[in-house]
Length: 188
Image (cartoon, rainbow, N blue to C red; front, side, top):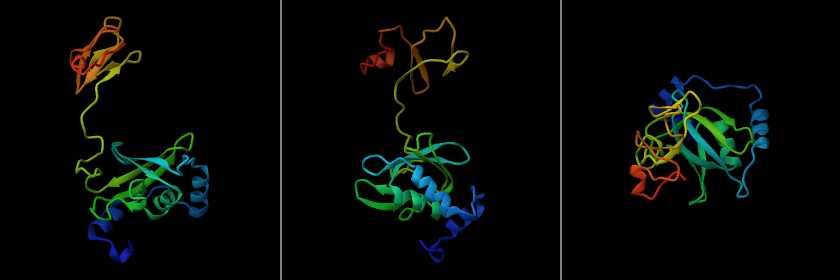
């Protein structure tokens, strides 16, 4: 999208964003990042998209080398669609754009974190994030001195605790939780 095709909303969001790290050697910096990135055997790298100011994880997408380069140099997030086998830029058809604030490779260089200003919803289903679905039942264990959703970590509390939708149900080792029993979930 060229500058003369930007909507008023695009201009307002871009103008309101504080710039991320800007380099006089952007070409050199991007080339170094692309060289450091470890793409999988399909030539792809997972990109975690996060709201810059809240830390909210919005979605996960896939990038190849070209999509990563576009994301780092054009100010908008670009993905590689594995199903359509083409590039797509978030918001071009919906207006729900992602404006890049910063990006970082993880310690192994095999995952990219992109911090963005999200305009509108991030998920194609119309929810704020792609992780707004049902909470999963998990077995949680409190670290020393920490609580798990209100259960104090002490010798009085079983170490294995099933957590679902904000409710904690304790079960002894090898026993099913109250809610997990209906799903065959247990902590052994």
